[in-house]
Length: 284
Length: 284
Image (cartoon, rainbow over all chains, first blue to last red; front, side, top):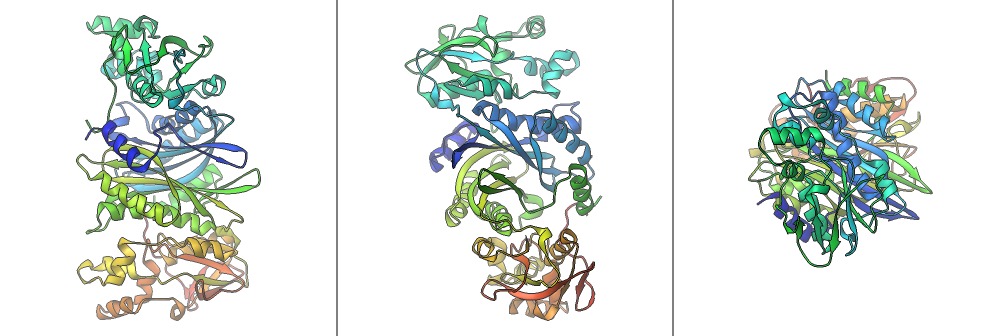
């Protein structure tokens, strides 16, 4: 069973909405709680230091909170590491990220085994952005640019500093998430194409994306063209970008780039054709 | 570096109190947040089904909340499993435990790799019990009985139903944790001896335990004696018992058994002699 089908079965079984984080209210506050695991085998590219791994484990979780429009408050994590392993270096990466994003690193636990870091982040929101809020008439926006991760991983030896930066020091779009107040939002963990499909499905609308509007870094275009490949396909399937894809009445250009629109109906389109469903899936 | 030393270094580094859960207040509420990972290699004995594993992953976390005197509210988990693996059976165990203990299973994520389940539980408390609250003059109490897990794992083929029950269907002491309102509390994950040392250290007091007061199941005594071993040592080192060890002015016999007392000074004593520090440690 593919991850997508399995998650679908699980959410059906549990009547859980498949959002980036679980949202609950208590008294007058809205909380977002998320858990995300970094698994060495699939999430740690060659050259990533233990400190980078710690940083990324935090960013994965804070990016989920960013997509909900929440302000990060607390981070906990459970580290599983082989013996010997420089656990303290990994923890330095965690504290570095928590300090940077004003989130308290509040402990966790430690186990022996194949390297993995399960992080938990708790955030507080004024309002919450869900995947399911996209409305016909909305524009589709994306923060930053997409494709550098895939382009870098494609051949690490020819990865440019801009590509390496996005792979080894990703950044959660917390400020953008807070500023957005969009109708719907999701972060790019599996790939732009995959996330756009999630938005369309959760909101029961159709999304049309235009390839020439997708913000792709010049060096990504250059590398793709040099290899005779399509930079747009790279951008669609590049995972772990931690950019936000959102829909709203208008796209504020200071927050993101407009790449398409929402209409009533079903399906996801790229330049008028059915968009290929690309992007990283575990369990394939 | 042993786990105990490593955790000490980490907590020093981060100025974190090493409690069973992280406690924070928001408006007028007290929350306890915990993360705990079940790793197949170290936490799954032979004969444990995927459903048992799911159950145990919940109980590990709810037991941490019980030790803080918190009422469980939400459970999330990140499942890492090899392909193929009966993930749905594991999830059924999670939902069974969440239903049983009135905790909402609120989602999580799924990854591919060596089997492990990282659970997160959030609870709400009126007051909080810490490890550091033991006072000279307190009595020491423990819920239930200790030793069945070690006795069963020692030789699974001769494990009695009572031993198997504690291994495969452990129970978090949530009701007891709520009823206690004790000065100090900790749950037994690594072993009674290890937890008593934690209490003494965190509270900067001395604890004296009397071996004939420790509640040990008759079948555990029988098995130990048959093998020419000391059932008290078994009880001291039996991990994953999920009982609560606590100190208070008086021990309510409806909640637990009095096994010793707290005095000023340093150290942990068993029948007047220095207690051996026993119990499961990862990284040894």
